[in-house]
Image 1 (cartoon, rainbow, N blue to C red):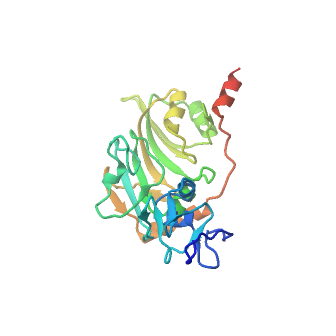
Image 2 (cartoon, rainbow, N blue to C red):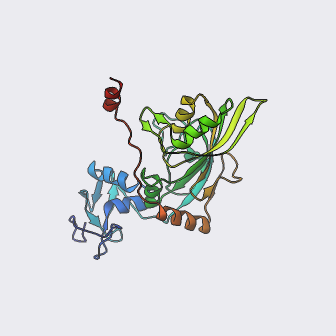
Image 3 (cartoon, rainbow, N blue to C red):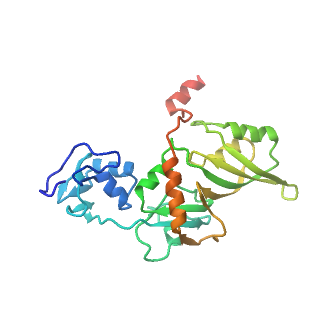
Length: 280
């Protein structure tokens, strides 16, 4: 949108900002913490975004300091970037709001923190490190499936894992939705008293319940799963159910890490119709 109150479309630089100072609306929405850029595009396509009272279109730009930008009628105001981490306990849902009324990770944050969203997901029955922010650009870089952002998990499984099974994990496991990317495996230990193994797994992709599905297929059901690292961020001694803001050095390291991520060709996943054809 322009100051005259009508939409401005056109080219902008890679960051979404043109020489006239106008910024693409998806970048404004992401910077305000409402969604990632891709999610913001969906909001615009759905007709939920207006500028100066007029419905916006994908590709439109606006000046956040001059134009009135709104989502579902609520005016958007750019907020200072916020970066928090929480140690999610089991039983909480990783979402801002749950339609079924289940407790969410948002209750772990102190009152008055401001609008933030979880970066990625942890299953309800998984625990550990979760990043919370209103930085949409950072969220997109960390979550883009081709960027291979590392996440490390401490996993407890049933039984003793053989060397050949660990090698299958390292090479990648074929799942219903296609082969997984190679998995980093370290710190493997077996406790004969409990008949359980513990290990550290490093993943560069984030499919739904991926670790549990891989290990179940290999004959070792997961008994406990805790995320201990996201890129340079470590869980450390943060106690379960606790939250803390990142310090300036952690924010700087995280942004530098995200800036170094690059697109990489990923293993192809099978579509449902392709899976049926393959079985014939």
